[in-house]
Image 1 (spheres, helix red, strand yellow):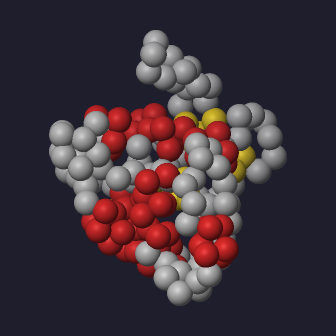
Image 2 (cartoon, rainbow, N blue to C red):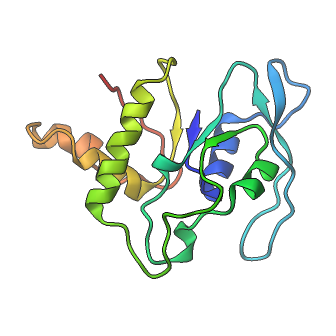
Image 3 (cartoon, rainbow, N blue to C red):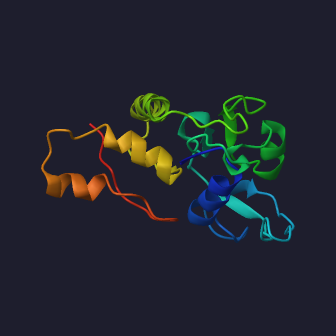
Length: 172
């Protein structure tokens, strides 16, 4: 399970691929520490646990397109590691060097980063990998594929992802 290192994606990953009950079979260590709510910012979350045998990785390459708004910035790795101890943050820098206030990442940069991320996914030993990421990142990355496909085929995989939507994509 690979997630963008932005907090909103990590929380979604925990909700979709974590286990809320510590007593459930096959549960490993703490995936996400309990978090208090912050009014108009974040809902309170109970602790969640990792399933044994699943590798949980945060990866800088699959983060959202860096836009001019601070919602596309990420928090320091140390803070993320403390709140999400079940994730491996080895592929995330200490501080966010990609986001620049007021600047927007180019579409070409997102595509290049997306292709680099997909190459990384293909090099992993797992044959099934769940990725929790963001709509704009997926949109620009997937638009670079299937130039010779029919309009009907393109409409299936080159459409915008809705919030929380899951799709299966086969890479070969």
